[in-house]
Length: 271
Image (tube, rainbow, N blue to C red; front, side, top):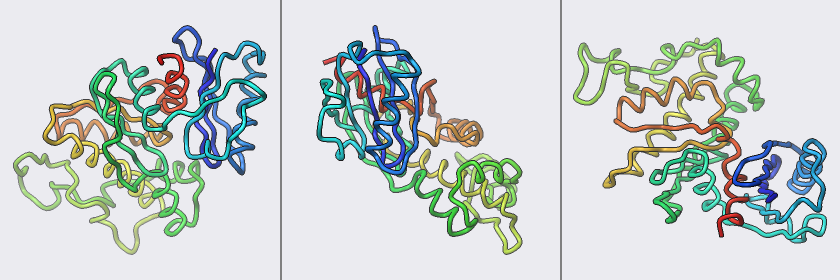
């Protein structure tokens, strides 16, 4: 088995790859990357009854991997470039060969995958970090579960201004339910629930629009979304509308949250 570990500052994601199959992805949160990594590794071995002798290679990636400079428990340990891991994991999980990987983390990175040509093409500073920061300021919480429980009760029509709100008929290329202005309908009496939903929609829409703009002057129509933001149920509302608006396809693979860790393992398996 090859172990792939995506080490964040506080969250670590770990997977095993055996015979080109993903084995039991796991996520652990701790106060620092070293604690997070060793906690995830130990729990992964224990939960899956894996012996150290079963492991061929450990591959590390992610910003937290910079804090790890010695072999993990004396096992062969190496590091892989995060953007390459994003692309490898998204390609493996989606089954596509030509697309743009949209890694929705603290910010958002965009990685072009064209067969074996995988390269970072840009990104935006909007992502989960944006959502948490604005939630702290506006809603006095950075707890994702609390944000979600508020958003479930929200009404997006009380936050966003739609084309139908400002025009009696559709505009060229813009249906009546397209967003004319994020937060354009907000008022001083807007509820916490509506604000929570509006913040989530704003971040997801900004990421989707930036992704589509990154493919201009190419024939790419497929975008594979990975990272923790893909777990937000609002993705099922936001991205189908963007698909119809732009004539593209947004795909969220089964292990979208773990694609970077999967890619880390594959960077060794496929070399």
